[in-house]
Image 1 (cartoon, rainbow, N blue to C red):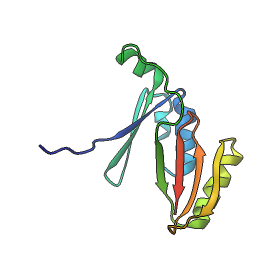
Image 2 (cartoon, rainbow, N blue to C red; image 1 turned 60 degrees about the horizontal axis):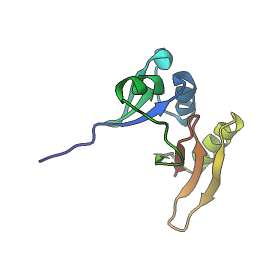
Image 3 (tube, rainbow, N blue to C red; image 1 turned 90 degrees about the vertical axis):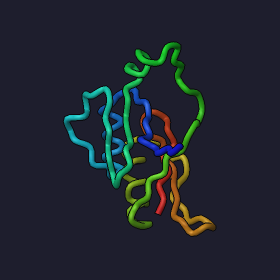
Length: 125
């Protein structure tokens, strides 16, 4: 048996708010996607998808909102200046900074912010 990851999806309360966050992060997302119930964003052969919670509730019977941190998504930036700049931009827009940019013992520049739906987003360079 062969298995291949098809996509990673996150559930969002407000599509435009979520997509604006990820646009600020640097993903290329068409403006027309803001009102959709499902959006696929493909980058380098990887699909990152967004689904509105109301749509998910109509498919998954008994769906309950997750509690606590369940996953961390990591996005690689070009370098430390890019990482620091994106972190400053996102936190200036009101997104919660969980871990300020820092150099790690394993050689990465690293920071964490929360997206509008509470997901932990790692920035690495």
